[in-house]
Image 1: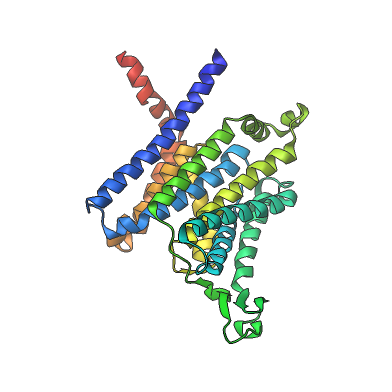
Image 2: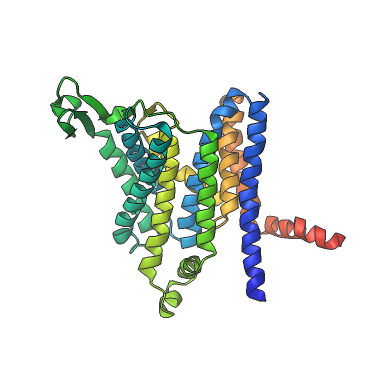
Length: 352
């Protein structure tokens, strides 16, 4: 009976989280159709989905697996460039719908593959060492793309790490990746509907994994690695599983990001160290291990700087104060007692 109640509780929590996303999507679509949303808000709808997806993906590694990773901006970069490269190659020969679907699959799978390949040697490390190595991976990926030149002509693909002149293409050749200038002309296939669907898919994958037998094994490794190994849990298998899925979902966010821009470049502001730290901030402020909290925190922290843009220099000061306030409210012992005392569930019990 107790097991059945736990199952119902997890299912209820999943439905609430998915329902929250669906209701938000419906409200935003109604406001859009009514013309009540500003152009700024319309432009933020897809980025909100992007950062919510990658925050959930990182929380799978940090909160559920219990490993600190600072390389998710790198996995996002892999998904973005691999999917954009595919879309550019088949832009004129394939219909938009099937092409974008395949781009999503390719971006997620290649990122997951990179997560597996990186995870095999890296997951032997723990704590700060793992964070440093994953951070180095993100920087290496970004720097490799910035020196990579790829072109295509009648003879096939040409690669170089010097400049586009060294590709030695025919006159009809076309540059696909132009070093630091990145990829130009990616089809603008991303929209709020696709972003919401991918966010729901991400939540379903992560929440179902958490509530599955594999998820319980992963959390057992997080809580006590030695005890988990002593009862026969394959540590390497489950760590690689969680890390690869997390990397694949980060690549999913990268696909949305790449197809929301006309020019895709591997710059520090979008795929560098600061982006990895910002994603980690979303996870920490939303609550480590709290998937719903990651979605809410990412939405709030993406909206705040844009909504306060009119305040010029003061907006970042207000943003910092809000971050400190949320951190204190989430982690201070007195704030925790206050939340428990005045929680909605407890107040409803009192009324009854």
